[in-house]
Amino acid sequence: MTTAESLSPGGVRSPSVTRTKLLATLVLVALVTPGCGGLSVEQKAATARFGATTGELADLADVAFRTTRADVVDLRSRMFELGSTSVDLNASATDLDGPLDLEQLEKRLRAAAALRRFGELLTLLVSDGPAARIRASADDLIGEVRAIDGVGLSEDRADAIAALVAKIGGWFIAGKQKRALRGVVLDTNTTIKDLISLIERDLDPAALEWTAALTETVESIHGTLMEEIRLLDPGDKRTLGHLGEIELGQAHIAVLQADSARLALDATTRDRRVRATADDMNIALQKLRLLHSELVTLVQHKEHDLGNFDWLVSQIRDLQSHLTTIMRP
Amino acid sequence: MANTLLIAKRIQLSKQRLDALLAHESITRAQAKELLKQRAALDREIMRLISVNIQTAGEEYDAATEALAKANTALADAIDDIDQIGEAINKVTAAVKWVSKVLEMA
Image 1 (cartoon, rainbow over the protein chains, first blue to last red):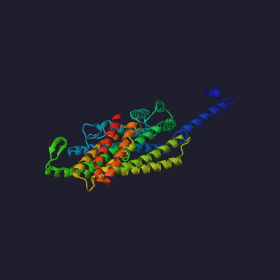
Image 2 (image 1 turned 180 degrees about the horizontal axis):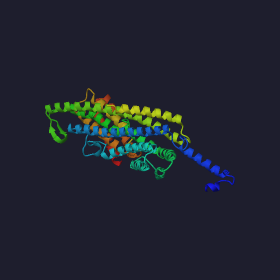
Image 3 (image 1 turned 30 degrees about the horizontal axis):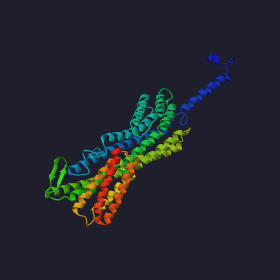
Image 4 (image 1 turned 135 degrees about the vertical axis):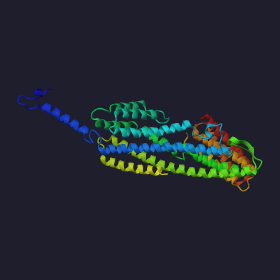
């Protein structure tokens, strides 16, 4: 419609044109006004902070998984050299890394990586970052999650996330950010909860999972190895790791007793450290679960509630401070 | 990996009772060495339990938990009467075999 066509013979705009312009203005306002079409600065900051904190927690879980395995390998190697009968190199679950095989470590690191990707994706969604990077981040998240046993992400959900993220870019990105954020958070809701539970279980020494391999190794040093060595008599034969079977003299036994005492002390120290870290991590994961649930609730509101976002921000700060405590040497 | 299971709890109790028996004032060195072989076997079974997901429904699982319960009773009896130690060792050996069977099926 040209300007000439839209004017009435007297130069007055027709009611239909006025309505069209008014509607266009309202749509524009809705898209750029915080709390309507897009996200406010505070909401973006809270979401970005949540994403960053999730990433930090995932990094700590990654370190905890690797450290526990390294501790188990070191302790069990020393047990093997001392002739522990609890270590059997011919069986996968009782060899030097015990049940913490590299393949098992890989699965745990993937779970931590998926959580980190989720954090990155949330941060990118509210950062006005390049659309290509946001899409790559979403693909990474979907890829990581699909590689983990026991954590589901249906084809429909994955497709929905991909479709939402693909729409990002172009003009009025702020309006799409909010919709994409809501979509990603809701479509990954169950998956993220599963991931948190998976990591939580693995870090719980009371559960028969990842950390239990270390606590059981320590228990075996104290309960079995120390006793085996205490009961050695001169003339006994014992297979000492790579040395093979030797007939023990008094001096051998004295050395073995001293070495096993040092090992027991070291094992206790590591066990205490791992248990303390596991306790701290479990508190952090519980807080993350709570914050995630809050985020899920908030993104479902037609209008994000800034008051709740303030609460979210304060809780995220609390979690960040807790993570700083864990990282402190 | 498996969650904490009845079978694991019973193995832990077996180990605790073996420790109590090892600390018994009347135990001989030969008996203690025999008990330690059983303890090491239980250490290995626990590590295997961490590494796999076992079937908790089935005759073998029931038989294993039952065998462990009998071993624990026998160990408690031996703590009270050290002359029962031979019976306790036999029961623990039998229980370890059942646990191994369950783990092999996983």
